[in-house]
Each structure stands twice: as C-alpha cells, then as structure tokens.
Amino acid sequence: MSPRALPTLLSLTAADALGAATEFRTPEAIRARYGDTFTSYQPGSVFGFAPGEATDDSQMVAATLRGYARGEGLPGVLAALREWLGTAPPDVGGLTRAALREGELEGGTRAWTESGHQSAGNGGLMRIAAVWLAGFRGAALERMDRLDARAALLDAGLLGLSTRPAHDAFREGDRAARSEVRARVRSGLLGHVTSQSGYVLDTLEAAAAHARADSWLACVEPAVLRGDDSDTVACVAGAVAGARGLEVPPHLLPPLRLGHSWPGWERGWSCLEHFPALLEGARAQPRP
Ligand SMILES: [Mg+2]
Image 1: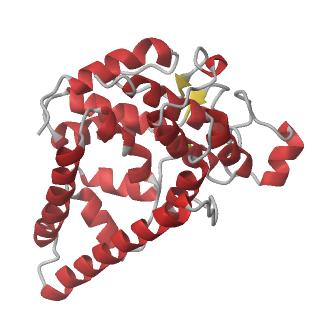
Image 2 (image 1 turned 90 degrees about the horizontal axis):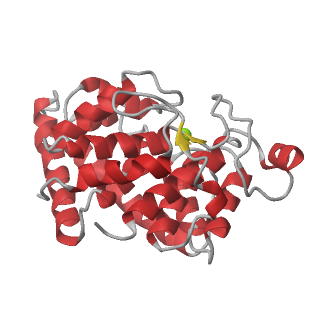
C-alpha cells in the first residue's frame, strides 16, 4: 500500500469534519461566532454533525472503498454507494441522489442528460480520491477514464438517447464540460477563487487554489473560514494536501469519526482505528 494512502484518507476526512461547522454560513457569521482562526473541531453544523464528525463527502469515499472491497468491480461500488444512500445520510446532493437511484452504472449519464447537461453538483469530486486510494495509478487511471467516456456514449443508446441529435448533444455537453474542468484547474493553480458556492467547477478551482499552501492548516483553514460549501472545498483541498504529504495536526486525529452509520460502518467508530482495514480491503482487489 502506498505510504500516503492512509494519511490522505485521514486528511480529507479531518478537513471535511473541520468544515462541517461552517457549511452554508457567510465569512462574516463564521468570524463572529468562531473568531479569525479555525484550528479545531467546533459545534454548529446545520446537519447536526458533532465536532469531529465528517459529512457525506468522506462517507462517500469510505462507501466507495467498501465497494471496491467487494471484488465485483464497478457494480460493487455502485451497490455499496446505494447501501449508503439507502440509510438516508444527510446533505446528499441532487445529482448524486438521482444518479444512484437509477441503480445502473449509466445512472450518472442518464441523470446528467435528464438535467439538460446543466446539473453540476460536487458528488463526483467528493468521491474521486477513493479511486486513487484504492490503488489506481497512471495508465490504469487513464484507461478507466477512456472506458468511462466510451461507455457513457454507448450507454446513451440504451437510455433513450437513440437519436443522432441526442447523441450529438451529449457529446457536445461532455466536450464542453471537460474543457471547463481543465480551465478551472489552471485558474485555481494560479490562486484564483471565484466562490465556494457548491457548483462543481467553483469547488474544483477553490480547492486547487487553497491546496497550494505550505502547511496542512494553511490549505484547509481558508476553505473553512470562507463558508458556503466549506466542508466539500476543505475535503477536496484536504485530499490534495494529504497526497502532497502535508501532515494533519495531530490533535485532529483521535476525535475523528464519520457522522453516519450504514451497513459496514458505525458512526461511533474511530477513523484512526478503522481506516486501515477499510483501505486494505479496497486495495486487496486486483487492478484492472
Ligand atoms: Mg458535505
């Protein structure tokens, strides 16, 4: 196992839990309540997460890793995410919910198409660290991406998109989305933050910008203090900070929990104690 896998999983979870208290709040309200720094878990989550509890972002990473551990490939991941969704976790995004409810691997394609290629939640960005944590690297990651794109176009034929205009619309939407992703990553790497609105491209840009800093807290704290979708931006920045080898402040690790129970995970479980087995199970499976 990569020596950075466990620290990265703990890092994204700790960042998510730190941001849970300030989600949906304004920077002014955050400073009025918590002060100018944010270095330890605090109460105040609008979803009732206790200090140290991480939200849907980290829960979906854990559920994805549990899915890989089934050894059934992507159908196993889908089944594991549906088990998690079936226990009514708070704060699930609309596109994630719609995609998983389809119950098929092409659910994401169908849900996005049904939104007119407009819906742009953060769910995919929240979960993506799980792919790297499960051990996919380089050529395997690239192959998955190509397969996904091709499968999406093939699946479009199975989803009622049987006309040429519908295929063309999907292809155009996909091409435009990929180009926007590249542009916003470049912008973030230059330090630009448009907003933490919860729109996926804003999240991507903000997380890329925050995660350039020199220490873990310097990557995560600005996301927490900026509010809005602070838990998700912090979580994505925390994943990058962890993968870079920046160390989570030690006091944030012992209290860390996932703020929800579902089959295979208990809300009261210590992440420090249970994450090693979660990762080992996912990474024991053969890579495609
Ligand atoms: Mg969240």
